Length: 300
Ligand SMILES: [Zn+2]
Image 1: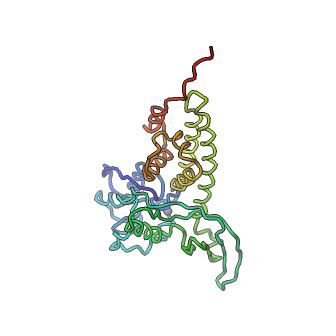
Image 2: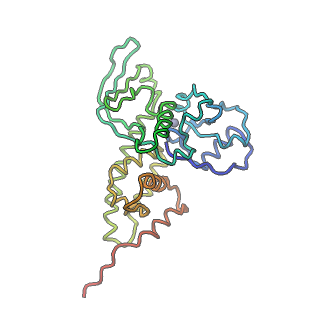
Image 3: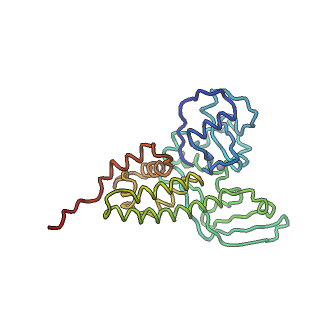
């Protein structure tokens, strides 16, 4: 779950649909909680009212409490009690800016499909990426972040919540109806991001021998485009940070310097990964900061 900055109250005729469209255009077409790309199913979640129906009465005063949500997060949060608002960490809150979530790849997760009688239909060891919390921040923030993970069941309702012995146990009926895709898609995003990190690494190596940032910028643009189509930007960020060392990151994202703090690096990488068009100022900033390769005097 990444931090969300909601712009000023829009000048629109308030309705479910106009709020969805405005959020698509301003904060992006992604679920505010799991970060899935919202292609066909986009809903509104109201922090003071919970899941909204499409005919919900809304006024402009509701703007500050509205968040886009996908069908799976919506289903997970159906028992949300707005009186417990303050127990949770919200993506549009100040707390979210401390980047309390981490995305951790775990191999050898026991993945089991069982029927209603408890008979084992299928069992294998698989890899998934789980949302967990960074424990180097204040404990009240960690607690709120964990409450949010649990409310929206960001690791699916089938996860046993035990990183030491991770298990996913799915009832056969749910398995054939494919009612939960977030975990599968998050791991697909992680794999795509690992490949992208390899491309960025190779592109960064060209910075010392060629005159400009073309390879790096092209690789970044390709990365931006894939993220735009898949979503799950925090997962992308985690894979890229896990696969590239600090020196390479500094070449690709020149704002990252040696003593950059973790949350500043996260914010910077996230901003660059979600870069959506050429008019975005960040791309220009890259060019200004990167002075080009060292100048080698011509041979005499
Ligand atoms: Zn979601």
